[in-house]
Image 1: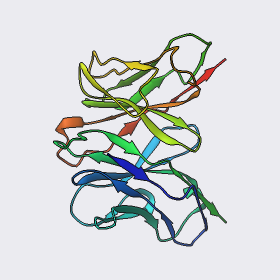
Image 2: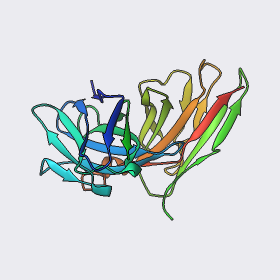
Image 3: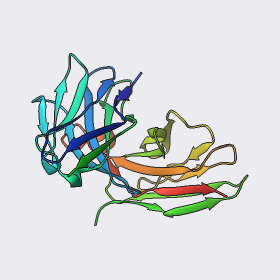
Image 4: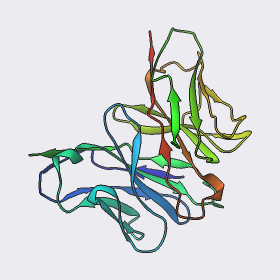
Length: 117
Length: 117
């Protein structure tokens, strides 16, 4: 079965400190992995993705994520948090073409990031 | 501008009524998705479609129906069988089965907030 877990409902960090939002996944075969951000009453905005290649991927607004196949994790990171980063963050996994989960896009339950001045 | 449009933004349903949520995209994407968002539960997949005239149930399809008669349109009907329909509904699209390249991320609409009155 395909699934995504975000173990923390909320992450609190001080502005200027590094942040990490955790994500683990379960999917047959090699996954496509994504991070999205959502602001109140809005749709989701794409941040970054892992398809293949380097395990460290860089995305929008200074965010990056590290793919770890052995730990089936894809944690979101940023070296220095901003107050404006405060939002709801979602990790997602999609089965690759030709797998039993072709095209099925599954999200975690979301993690609220609160960055305090 | 290319994008994905959901309408209406707010929708009120009386007990026992069916209502239809609209989702239209002009991105030439093959795949489209419907999600339901409830506080603390993240995004749950209702239905998805990889190609015109074909769709699959997601994790919470009961009480919902969809159609995919045109590539650009994927309307969702919330039927009277859905006992707790009050939620925020999000539509998304991806390139789909053609996406063996870099453009694999999903694009989201701005959502429809459905309330039972």
